[in-house]
Image 1 (tube, rainbow, N blue to C red):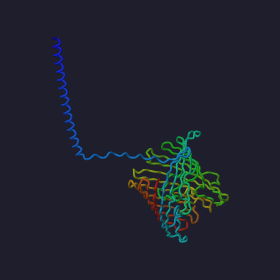
Image 2 (image 1 turned 120 degrees about the vertical axis):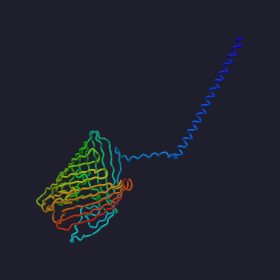
Image 3 (image 1 turned 135 degrees about the horizontal axis):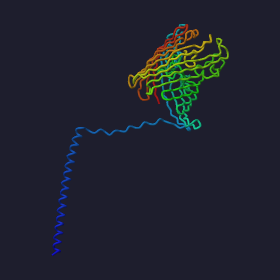
Image 4 (image 1 turned 90 degrees about the horizontal axis):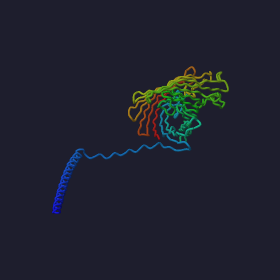
Length: 431
């Protein structure tokens, strides 16, 4: 009896379990059907939204990373190369001192026979090649960094198809904290700026002082303050040998020229800067000239730069001195050998640069070198000045085209002036 009761009880439990399972399965089926209906509705809404927005844009393509500057190894040093290829086509309607490296305009006096003598020249001599090198630190020199530069161009004479190279810079330098020591050839400390016209000679002897020469140099930079000084070779530029004894008069003095500059600049990059500078040099001859054997060159000056908004800049220099031919002053005249006096002169230049578009720059400027007429000998040059306008077009990242016009005038003591309209069309490819 009991056995029958247990069997009936177990059968009832089994039936109840099956009924529960069937109910749960039915509920799950209903839930899955509802989810499928919801997904179908969402897919339809998404398709309608895509149709209204149009086709999807293609995925962005990652820009290639810029290649690192090419470096080469040489012993413990790394080398980085730079430069440009440049070709100039120049027209003059009167004769300058040199067609490719002018410093003044020749007199058009009837006695010279040069009136209205025009000229056209074409050359790639300003093509430039250089390399910067960085070496290891020197433990015995307070762990200073050693670096330097070698740079050449081809403005050194020779036939047009056989131009001779010249080095512009050749130096090494040691950098430690805020101090830099330089040994070799580089630009003068004085007159650190230059006009953006007449790249052949940078308006030397026409208002812009300074050149390159062998020197020993020290530079200290701390915040807005820069101090530089140098001892350089006198006669490196004008090669002056007034007594014709085969020894440059600057070297015969057994003294270097001395240069110094103090500069200040704004905290904001390229906002403004100003500098004050001076120099002094000595020459000595083996015989008297005008009763003198020792001659002194000296000068003082200032340079300045000022940003006029984002698209314009003003820069220039002003100076005064005496016996400045070795520093590109006095229109290349330093000593009056008849009187024994050094030739005093004053001058400078002013330039406005404007960016009318993102791919062009316009420069307007004036330069002047004005010696004291009473110091200049007969037929000597008494004033050298020029107005100029230059425009540079950046055709592509490495490629530029430029055009310049200079109205250049040189006056003489006892001769008619020289007046030249000079046009220069050039192309540059930088690398």
